[in-house]
Image 1: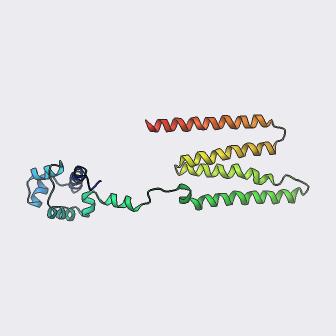
Image 2 (image 1 turned 180 degrees about the horizontal axis):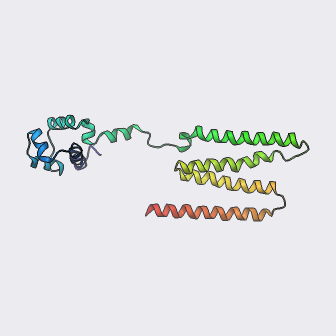
Image 3 (image 1 turned 180 degrees about the vertical axis):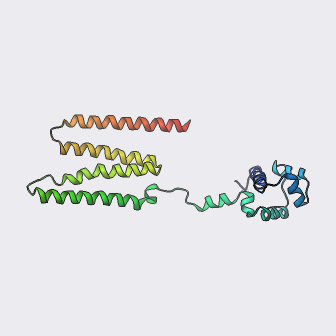
Length: 204
């Protein structure tokens, strides 16, 4: 509510006066008797055609068990003003993201060690770290979807898609790289179209 806008201030007050009266199970006549005002005055206040005196507002706040800020519609505005206006989803969930990354990298390290223990002659144990990339970014992207940070989710899942293509090329040398990356491009295009449709739908 804008304190510099009398109309908005009066409308918010009128709405709260009616809301708290009904919550207290009082009719306009019953409230009028308690305040020594007519029910017409109560009705006028709740329609926004008049404003109670400060002394009456204080009595109403005591009667309803709310603060003057709540009665005037200021409490919500104060809470919103105290909250950060722009929350960076990465900063907000940094601990969870770092934990996911650590788990995936530890799993990759264990896989690398096992490959070297079981087959010391193998030269492709390092591929465990390459495979870890799409897994890691896929987990991060999924987490961002759960957190409803869809822009970040799109970016993370896009990285997961292309690192998966690289992993497939390195793991399966017999596969046609053009086919792998063409498939990746189709999936990326499909994701862009889906995101565009969602944004268009929301704008409407």
